[in-house]
Length: 103
Image (tube, rainbow, N blue to C red):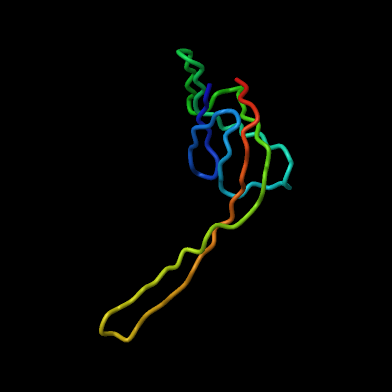
């Protein structure tokens, strides 16, 4: 059994017991989070597809940790103009473990 959920502007294919990193969600480590934007649930040959979301379906996950990803360096360089700009960005993430799929 698997489901496709939308969170943080992205879509993820999840199964029970899967650990993944998503965009930052509010909550402490050990807290439970419900992902209610379920796009699809498949159980063998039984497939349910939402328009755009399935009503009454949810995926329950447990927050394992909060963190920040590796730094992404942005470098702008204009040749022969004596101009360069260097910045960086570290994105926040939440590591979650999928506990159950209900739908």
